[in-house]
Length: 314
Image 1 (cartoon, rainbow, N blue to C red):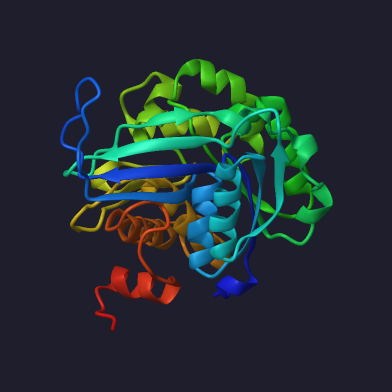
Image 2 (image 1 turned 135 degrees about the vertical axis):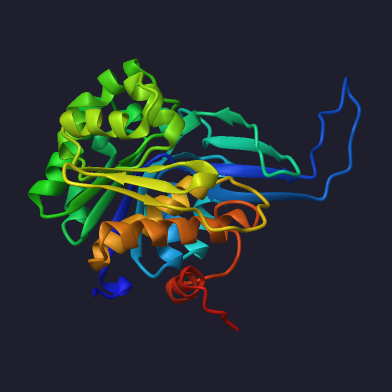
């Protein structure tokens, strides 16, 4: 099996700075205040959050995206760099603020959010020095809807021509209009990594397997969909695989989808089977769900594998 430090991944697209507020049972009315347990910043986004977890699992990761020249951008870039991520692919823009979210986390782990799209809407393929992808083994595109189908197709096609495998994850809620908008990119996606609501919304169906097969017909190589507390479902032209979630005490579900993507991507890059890669994805998501934010906790690949196997670690 390939060592994780032999895996080099370009995480391209949506990078966000999250502000989590823990201890929210209700929002104050008027101008009233409220004491909370914790307020914490963390890097996030379908590219940025996945990059963080991939780096923790041992992969070499380079971020590509757009952030503002504001203090939020400074904080996001520094947080990614602290995780060992190469941030030289992040472009700074004066045209928009750094993308950010404020997330009040309820006691059961639910997390409604306020979100500012910011600089993510300004990111284009022209912002990427494509020559820097030549040494990578995989390209993960988080948020193809921001680029649009033709531009995303251009990027993914370039990556595949260079021998990289590719994966795609969405940020926007799924609906048939989004599917039409990104359709040109789908034939160049080896793996599509949506959540269940996105998948059903994209296809207008009420069955995950049927929806996955519709996207396979649109050109995707494999659909690996997260299914909340039920785990994950992996569908290819030849098989349907279900993997249960791990039973844990949930603190915050922010970033669990990105963590699943990271585990699944790394598993496939190492040569693990689809099932074993999905198990790794679910086990990685479980690490994140037990803390606050995508960068919650302290773990590496060995610890996640031990958790998945039910082996105690010290």
